[in-house]
Image (cartoon, rainbow, N blue to C red; front, side, top):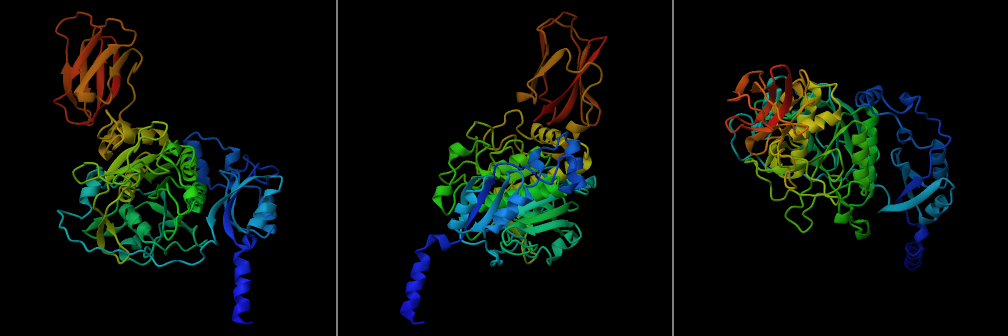
Length: 539
């Protein structure tokens, strides 16, 4: 064929959009006539996933059922290649021509279709983005001491709490060298599941090195130098991010990975990824859409949390640019969106702020994200900054709490993490509830809720105690008398007692707690005939 003839054919092909293949989300109307039933969950959920739902009192629902396999088969018969499926959103992602999608749209059970990325799904790994920076600073003790001690993880490790028995799913851009570098050798038997949702194969040890660094903060070990936050946890490694470009398909890859993490029984999802703008501006999100419901990845995070999974995500690194605000999925409810602080505990300038579009406080908590020590792909230590680095520290802390309290519902874990954090008394849209601390969380959870008639007669406010002044008041605005008010610390020791100077009845009594260090305490009101108790927090 002559060159001119080849040119004409190529022009005709490029001018015929029905021959081009793109990637589309196909939403289904129902799950009718599915072979799966709620009464037989073992067909689509592991026993660990079922047990997690039971612990959290979460009933199974049609949302848990996989898509109807007949629908999937029929859609594939149109010539479209099925890439991903989502039971939570009852959808598929396919690679197809516009003509094939038009045919699929006529199927009675198809609700709608949406373009999520141009072109075909990348089948091959790409060259990782490796930016190894040698260690240049000196540290007292291990190099990770600053980032761990800030959260009290040093105390956690001293109690031999290192995430054993907890499964963490890490969703990221790739994990090159995790299967070869020495600081990860101990993990080779702890990786219980793996999948590359970008290249659609079982090899997560390729592509960008961001995931390797994030995983190292949770799990790497280098004798006398580097300790991850939860090095004894087990892991699911899922590649969901394709760094060379940015399209909404990555949200569906995130969604599919979260569903897989749920199915295998993961306890925690760590995702240091955020989405607000894309290579196709028509896909961009606006700040008004940061409402906890709009972005696909936000919906995925919210649903994962509703299945009893602790979801820790990066707040975003938009603080120094025009966007400034958090990025999805950080706007999701009932998760931990993590901001960044410096080693001095001050907000990192790049850390994204809140609130959400519906005026909820974000981020939720914060950890060290400025010059956080990580392990690079060649096994050396380097320092990286970002909310991506703060997030795995919180995941490691959460893993320790779950190991210590394996039967605790995640709602109580999230409450304890936030209500004992450094600025729980006055949370804001810079650092949320502040920097959590392991020992304060454990103290909060270990104290008995009540002794005799807790919460029945008195109110204690503000709690956490703002400015270290606490008011005790009778609930019904009545006068009351007491014989003593006692403060007990986390070790069960009485540290302060107040006795009335007279037996005169009062409406309210103010207690000055300025002399007490920050922490969790039990306050007892003794009336002579009864004892009323309340757990209080001094930030």
